[in-house]
Image (cartoon, rainbow, N blue to C red; front, side):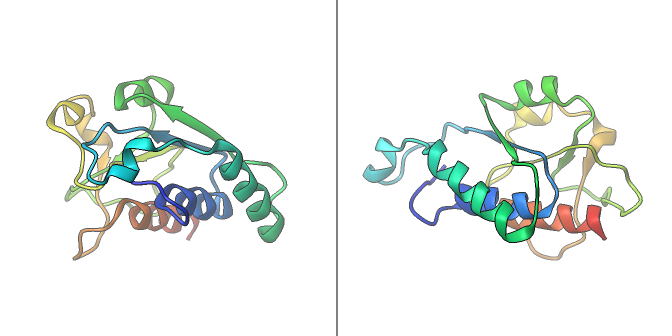
Length: 147
């Protein structure tokens, strides 16, 4: 996961805290390091907490979203067994579906091994002609839930 100032995880936390989620779960994927700067990456949880506090103040939210860092998809599914999976699927996510939690994969999608863990009836896609970045897919799912 590429992390730098103004990075994707900061944006994901900020956008999701404004929308509706009480918990932000992030699976730290182990991907090859492309740039030397990325090999020294350390997640700045204090910075993320400041982002959350400022976001809550701006949108009027009274409770601070929790941040969970998980090791893999299996751990996520054990914690959230009723979660739906957002992936490439003709089974489109409908507004009427009750969603407690959802999992969006990393850029490039889930691995074959991860897909084997999913129950087929819990995999949903979004109606889009484009392949979405993971942070855009998260906002799409939140919009479906809210509207």
